[in-house]
Structures are given as C-alpha cells and as structure tokens.
Length: 388
Image (cartoon, rainbow, N blue to C red; front, side, top):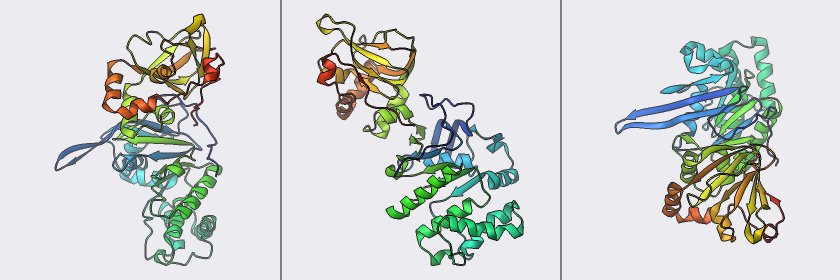
C-alpha cells in the first residue's frame, strides 16, 4: 500500500517550533497541567505544532505521552493552561462554549476509539444526528446524505441496524460516516483502529486515504507504526513534548527518551556556502544532522586535503564515532553550493549521554556507513533522506 501524500505540501523547516504562514491549524506554546492528589502533572509542555490543508498526520507516542491531550486541544474538548490554538481564522479557546459547539459542528469531525455511537439509535439515525444538531442541512436532505455516507464507508443496506447488531469494524465505519455528516474540512481520529483487527484497521486506513484525496485534512492518534509510516507526516511525542521530526527520521533506532534528549541538545547552526563547520574537533565527539542544503565531508589523509568522501543532504546524520571507526579522525565538513542549516551537539554533554547509555554509542557508530568507495575518494550522497 502506498503512502498518502497531501494535496498541499508545506515547506517543512527543521525545528518543530516553526510554522509556515499557510498553516491550517497552529498550536502555539501549548502547556496543559492537570492537578491531582499527588500534585501537578504536565501533560503537554510548550508544544508548538502546525498542520496543513490536505495532510494526513499521525501522532505517535507511548501511553501517557500526551497524544490524546494534544488532539483534545484542537477539538476544544480540553483547554490549555497556556498557549493558543488557531484553526483557520478562529482561536478555538477564545470562543464561548456555545459558539465553540457550533464552530466544532461545522469544521471538525471527531472519531473516537470506542465509537461513541448512541446504542438506541440506528446507524442511519446516528449519522443524521450531527446534521440535526447543526441545522446545516434541510430535513429533506439529511436522510439522503446519511445513506450516501453509509454507502461510502461500506455500510450500504445496514442503515436500520442498531450498533450492537454489527461488528466493531462496522461500528467504527459508522462513526466515521457520522464524523463526515456536516462535511467538515478536518477529521480528528483518536486511536480509530485501536480496537480493531489488522484487516479492519487496513480498511479504515484506506477509507482515510480516500478522504485525503477528496481534500480533507486528517489527524490520527495511533499506536500502529505500520499505519503511521504511510501517512503524510508523523509527529512523535514523548513526556508531553514533540520530538524534533528530523531527529526522529534520521535516528529511528533510538528510544523516545533518547530522541527527546537530542531534541533538547541539538543546536541549530547556519553555514555560508563554501564555509567549513568551525571548531568541530575541539570538543571531542560530535553529532551533526543536516536540515537544509548539503555538507561535504573532506578527508586530508595522504596529502589530499580537499578530497571529498561523501555529501550529506537534508535528513542525513553523521557522527564522529562512525568516522573514527572507519579510520577518519580529522574530517572537515564544508557547505556545498549554498548555505547550510544543520543541528549539532558535541562536548561533555554528548560524552556523558553516550556513557550513560552504551547502546547510544553503538547506534551512532552506524549512522553513516563509510564504504571503501568513499575511502578511495569517490563521492557518495548521504543515504538517508527525510520523507515528509
């Protein structure tokens, strides 16, 4: 099955706290703190995230990481302790409860993990209900539209059935039809396949992919990595914070807590065309991740100081550990053709992180395999490209 590609791809920037002006949804510096008997718990910590028209974005993280809280901020089901959510021209949490309900009914479709169908109403009546509440369609149009939506999700002929009379997958399809009742531009799905078998989960994914083709924007919380890998983009969340997507893509074998450490400790730098990355060896070990442009790795062994070994493009990572394992102890990295934006961490903090978790060192030694062809002086493009 092919990955979904949105109809309006944004120009992604390397850091998760920057957004393009054409973002359909903009979450800015969201903090959400809950109070309980044990004190305060921060579910979201300074989260900034943007979503664009025609995207199918998956939100992935461990249980308790903040996934559902994040989407609840967008739907208005929950309110932030601080920060703002803008969807289109509306600042969601500035609306009164009544205005928010009206706005939500016209702009958002919400699909829940446990379906939330009304048990005493038929599937047809469940799908018609949002149209009745919003008044967006005339009484004469509602039944015809509901029947067409049930047909769209594969439930033709089951319109008179109660939810309990159909399978879990069919109930979820009915819930999707209900979410589409008022033709909202945005669909929010919180673990929509969590209670379904793998075959039905695939069917739900195919249904969502078809909606993207129709111009919808979908945000899906999921534990299913195989599904998330086929969406337009994936947001990875850990301990209430978003992991830098460039870091997650370049170093997928690291654990979430390790990726979050790198998100905090990789610092953004810019380099003019033709310039050399300064002070690269003064602090010992280092890790670089290219976010824009190209870096050329040069080796000065054997008197060939300007001999290029490889080029690293956007999404490529390289560590001193891997080069040292290949016998390259003093490489130079130069911006090729244009200015380069990159992320770098080095020095005692990186050394301490490597020593605390030995597997980190092993993983970084394999970030970029330096082949004999490179050692012979033939340039190879970096092997890992960030897919967005």
